[in-house]
Image 1 (cartoon, rainbow, N blue to C red):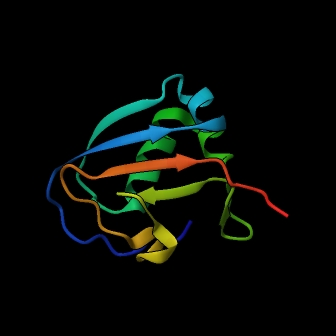
Image 2: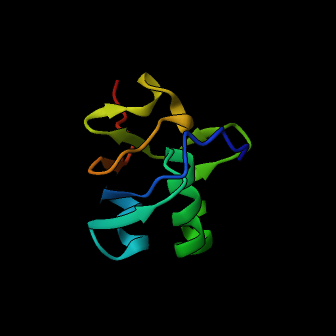
Length: 102
C-alpha cells in the first residue's frame, strides 16, 4: 500500500468494531487501540503488524480495493478521505464484510 500523508503525531484512542472474517482473524469483536499515526492507513498498518498475513489478506493490494468496508463514525471512508481519513481520539472504526446485492 502507498502511505498517505499522516495528519499529525498526536496520540488517539480508537475503538474498533470487527465483523466477518476480520472478527475471526482477530478473535474478538471489539478492540481499543492507541495510535500515533492517526489516519485509517496508519491504523490498518498497525493491525497488519499485530495480526499478520491473515489480516493483510483482507486487502487486495493489486487492485487497491478492500474485501471489507471501512467505516469511521458511521460514514464509509470512501465518502471521506479514503485511507488518508484522519482519526481522532474517541473515533469508532468498523471493518465490515461487503454487502452483495442484486
